[in-house]
Image (cartoon, helix red, strand yellow):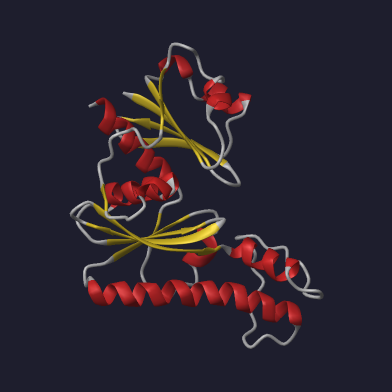
Amino acid sequence: MRNIVVDRGNTRTKVGVFERGQLIAHYYDISATVLQQLNLQATDRVIASSVGHGVEEIKALFPANIVWMTFDRQLNLPIKLDYDTPETLGLDRIAAAIGALVCIPTNNILVLDAGSCLTIDLVTKDQFFHGGVISPGVQMRFKAMHAFTQKLPQIDWSAEEQTPLVLPGLSTQQSMRAGVLKGIQFEIEGHIRYYSGLYPDLKVILTGGDAQYFENIINTTIFTEDSLVLIGLNRVLEYNVA
């Protein structure tokens, strides 16, 4: 079976191609050029998820006779939600948690998603999602400092940046960079220490647009999977058509 998985996030759209459960290709948009590479005639099924947007315009790009599934709350999930307000739980967090269990099925897992927001969620090996924390991501923190003060500048930053951090900061920009980037690093490491005390077999998996940066500075062993949400969405697709 050949599946196409589409994840439309806050800042980018990712597309994955799966054959027999394995990710064989992924793309960072869904342009006409990408669609030509997807070999739609050989595709059996598509699942699409969107954060804050509809998927009808994406669906319109595919042949009308293709098997189509939208990731929503009506689908059956291969995970149990231990969450007081499941109706408000982000579908991206659910998909990342499911993807984590596909990648690491035998351990308790801390799922870190460093994107527009930083989410840190606990998933246990008995296939329960136990919630976690949501806090501002890198760009959101930089923008907030500029927007809510009179004189702090707007910092332009990307996950590929190699500018070394100075701690303590010796200028306003250095102090802002240290505050945001070291603040998130210490936040992540603090949560890892806390949950490792509760679950000695804890594994940590990292995803999201800023994962590349934090992968290199977090002071613990972590597993990085850029396609974690795609892997989770494919598992949901397979679970609902089995």
